[in-house]
Length: 226
Image 1: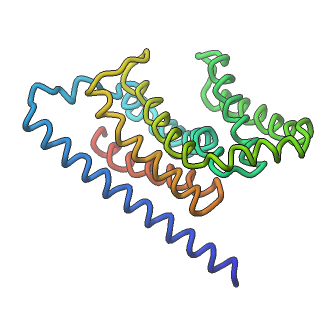
Image 2: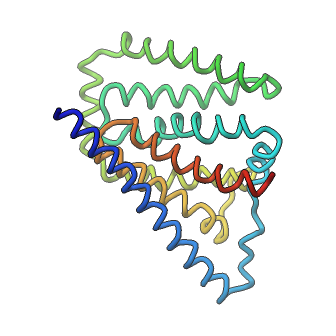
């Protein structure tokens, strides 16, 4: 009974944070509209997410898999797993780094389903191996050190999460005022993903909130591009 009440609270908290995040988006875009009205020379359309839009148009199933399923799992494992982590969270963090390395090394012309299946199998093995190779005492010491710095990690991970999404707009890292404005909603999202990880205390919840966020984008964009 206690578990059911706890689960019910966490589900309500998920949708409460989702609503707050959407409200922050609306406020941000309202302020951005005012900024554009006062400074029309600020060209907010000079950067486009061309690769993402191309994938959505040509292969909606692939886009859905990458945006709604894979990206939330990998990105939250990388950015939110160190927020008051458990031992399993730490292993997820190391696995997410392995995923990124594997993605860089994987041939670009490999079929996307085979590529991600192979990466998943390698990461599953690595996750198991970490539990066997790293002494439990060392894992607990690392956990304790990270746990105490959760506030710094929360804010830092939200900002870095936003900056990583610069590559949605440009091929190599650069920064200007327009790009900062474009990535600010991701910083907002990163803040709420971290918030729900701290409140609900499990990795499932930031992944779920991230998936809801990306699903909303998919449902808005897909009918427009068809």
